Length: 314
Image (cartoon, rainbow, N blue to C red; front, side, top):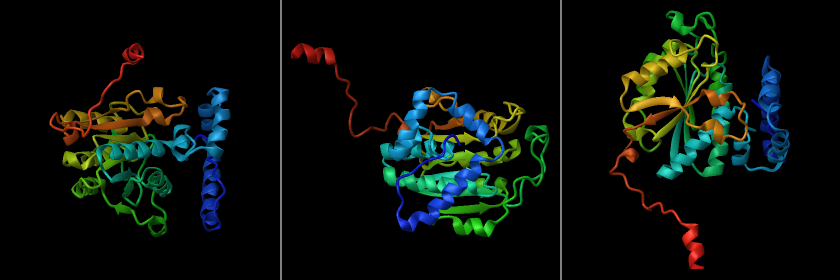
């Protein structure tokens, strides 16, 4: 998280939920290491951008707040808005979002809130699905799981029933072994709500590897480009030979028409460039998607104007 998000005056009926949200933001801000992260990511940016952020936080639209990284969990806000815009471009009305590794559920509930705000801004609806073992992490398989950082029992889901009740109607929890649940879920995807974003927060190589079948269903069940957030690749032991990056590398080797790569030129397109989530944002390229076929035609052609010829005619 970079900056606490401000909002306009809130109707009385929403006051209780807003107070709870602000309480979550403050608790998150004062977690170990968060203030230092805010210092590095925001105060190292140009002063005029930080001053402008205050005006955007108070008066800006939701889309502007996403652009200025003023939404809690920017790593969810950007790809969800990206998926909604892509859905509108390609003629979809609904998109599926997935979080792999729910743990306490704070991230999943934030995803639901961001999706709700994105729907209001774009009109695109969302199906939201969270995956977790429910009992914490299993034993590490070997060095590839970075056992010096993660171990059996870490990150259990402490209150399943409470989390389940807190989820909105368009969200669900899938509890079980990801070796089974990921493949089973992929078979439920449909072109009516293609997969548009995957957040991978499973820590282990072995768990990330087991989750990869979620990206191997029929091509029409995905957006042509699916943002993939890899949460745990910033650990010092993470590399192309360990952790989630190894799972991605093996996925690329095993699939000729599906590739996961860093999100091209994302940093150059962002207003704030020092935020860490940019380095963790990848994209699954669905090369066999029907819209990527030479036979797929848009309703209108792209035409470039020539201002020099227009000026000459005047």
